[in-house]
Structures are given as structure tokens and as C-alpha cells.
Amino acid sequence: MAVRIEKSGSVWTVIHSRPEARNAMDPASADALVAAFQSFDADSTADVAVLWGEGGAFCAGWDLKYVSSLVGEQPLAALDFPTDGGKPPRGPLGPTRLELSKPVIAAVEGPAVAGGMELALWCDLRVMAESAYIGVYCRRWGIPLIDGGTVRLPRLVGQGRALDIILTGRKVAAEECHRIGACERLVPHGQARAAAEQLAREIARFPQRCVRSDRMSVYRQHGLPVRKALETEWRTSVASVTAEGISGAGRFNAGKGRHGDFLDIH
Image (cartoon, rainbow, N blue to C red; front, side):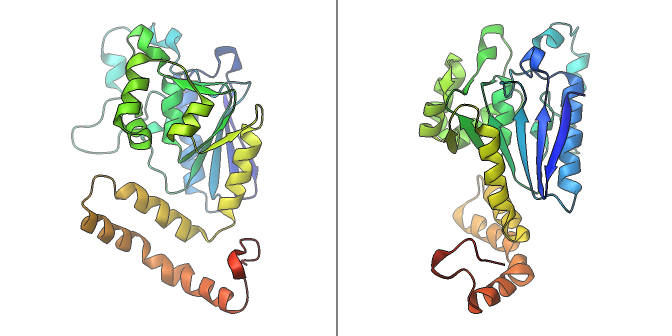
């Protein structure tokens, strides 16, 4: 099986393993990744997921051997968005159209190129090894970005920088990704998975209803005027004050977490 899950408490690591193809995505892998993340989102014992490509590559994109076998428009029509606004099918790279309620962290070693870049951009955070890189390598073959790259990359790095990356198809090394905001953490070669799992454990320590409502509010405010965004934040997050915030304030009042101590909070 090209996709497996390893669990450590409330942290799940979803592993894509097609090293013979540099973890390029074929339909079976895409379906398996969707199923894995749907299971993660539905499981009440799971809080944070890490996505990692085994064998030294995060993902080399859509499997072009598979793409070259397509005939006519029918195979692509199966991935089209429904005209009635209903639930869309999976993306070519699998989970890129899922809107989860919990955070996912990409652990990027080696290439995250073409659709692999889009898969990393779908995640909430990206931890990149210093030897890792992104790039729209599919620019060479006339394959467009169809897994959210033209949507998510500009939101992270700005329109001009995104267009420079998208139109040229150039290699963007991890250091530049970190500098322009395409990744959030930079770690030594070979350490991306361990660092991402440590970050996941840090996030999983906190009261999770609050984590999830704040995360959701960030996404829901896109494109809204300030007043509407503030209203959306309030309606998204206010319930977690009574669900978790009041008891958390009580723990602080009893002496926990003083002077910015993030360790003694339970």
C-alpha cells in the first residue's frame, strides 16, 4: 500500500510511499490519501496530522506516466466541480480540495514540485529541510496548476512573487521559501519529519476546540471586509470561550502557566 498511517498519541503521520516514482501521485495514492485524512478528521482521538513523503522526496507531482495515458476529456471530467455547488470530488493530488477541521503539517524533504508543491500548500504549515525545494516543474510540459497552487501560493507569498514562481517554473530552494513565507520552519537535511512531528505535539498540547476555531477563523476571513471578518471571527470562536476558555482561565488563576510558561498548563 502506497499510503500508511503511524500514530503517536493524538498526532498522526500520514506517509506517502512510492519512492520508485519520487512519490508522484497516481489515482490509487490520491484515493488513499483522501481516505487517510478523512479518517484523521473524523477520529476524536486525533488532533494534528503530519504529511510526509518516504524515500527522500515529498512529492514529484501528478504522475505524468498516468497523465500521458489519458484519452479525451472523460477522465478529467470525473474530477470536475459539480455545477450544483455540491461536494467536489478529490483533486488530482488527492486531498487538495478537502477542508479539514484540524491542522496538517507538511514535512518536506527533497522535491515538492508541480502538484507536490500544491499538496504542500494545502497543508496549514510547512517544515522544509534545507535541501528541499519547490517549483512549478510541470511548466515544461503544459500541465497547469489544478490543485490550488494559483490560489494558495499568492495568499502566502503575494501575487508578484507567486507569479514569478508560477510563470518561470524555476526551482525555489528551501531558504528562499522560508524567506518569502512559502514555508514556516527550516531544518537540517533529514530532519523535516521529526521537526514536524515535534511541532504537531506542541500544537496538540493545547485545548483543541480553541485551536480549531482560531484556525478556521483565519481561513474564513479571506476576502472579507474588516467588519464582516470581525463578525466571522466572533461567531466562529466565541463558543470556545465557554467550552474551554473559562476553565483555562481558572487554571491560570490557580497558579498554572504564570510568566508565559507554556509547559505547566494542565
